[in-house]
Length: 342
Ligand SMILES: NC(=O)C1=CN([C@@H]2O[C@H](COP(=O)(O)OP(=O)(O)OC[C@H]3O[C@@H](n4cnc5c(N)ncnc54)[C@H](O)[C@@H]3O)[C@@H](O)[C@H]2O)C=CC1
Ligand SMILES: O=C([O-])CC(=O)C(=O)O
Image (cartoon, rainbow, N blue to C red; front, side, top):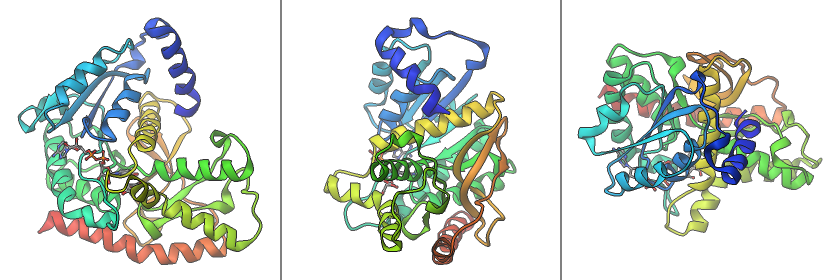
């Protein structure tokens, strides 16, 4: 896992420059970031530049700063080659030959907004990016960070279908930040290193659709009372809003999302290079519930999703959360599908 693999690598990179990186054929992956000059895009690209599985990092954005971000990162003494692309004319070149495309392009929330309030602006951005991917790199694994993730994954899927290149195993919604936060909060409660905490977070990525499965958490959170479990659940569900409020109009989570996006991308790349048992939660096409897309632990492989691992046994409280989540999730999914079909 990135958490195990990249942390020591990152430490080595900082201490010793590039000389400790070895170049092997297995490193030949091109990763493209769409929205690379943004609040998430920049720290995400920084971490991907340190990822030993990335050989080429293509940074795409509309912002005038984009070539500068690429130039800046290209001076880091790690092997990945960095290329900058600005504006729609350069998008096809940024996309071409990409193995993995990570999309954090789009507007973030301000206080008082829901993720769904971002739909009108972000839906068109994700639709147009995916349209270009369908033409120039239809086999790329697409990792969608842009909110509302619950609707953006259906949008990307419908665009690929329209172009006759749909492969549900290659379109992934990134919900990793929910797991990263859960690990943090349980780590705090138990007084343990958050990296040792294992917990699935299932459903979707907004409010009530975020379902932390605390009954499966290892180690178990050291709280017995049901009301405390409910407070922790609510905190995980509302953690994004906690950051939005604290940033007071300056956007939403960017640094923890950059970190989470890099963890997710690294796991996708490990699957691509043929490693087995690489598991992350992801929001994917699903038949586990009556929602057409659902997040839960997924085993990655050479073609993206290798196996959907399901979500195991829920306790009565989590079953109740799932019941509350499904209507909202289905509404978000239909909204995304309708947007492309109209
Ligand atoms: N999945 C998750 O867990 C999370 C998702 N997000 C979402 O990620 C998105 C980005 O957030 P931030 O980076 O904070 O926003 P930001 O505004 O700082 O950056 C967005 C970047 O996207 C670029 N952009 C806009 N339209 C584009 C297009 N058509 N093509 C390429 N680039 C384009 C902008 O120029 C900007 O550089 C938001 O929708 C936010 O809600 C944020 C945190 C967590
Ligand atoms: O809350 C937001 O708008 C950004 C996000 O998805 C998160 O931080 O989980």
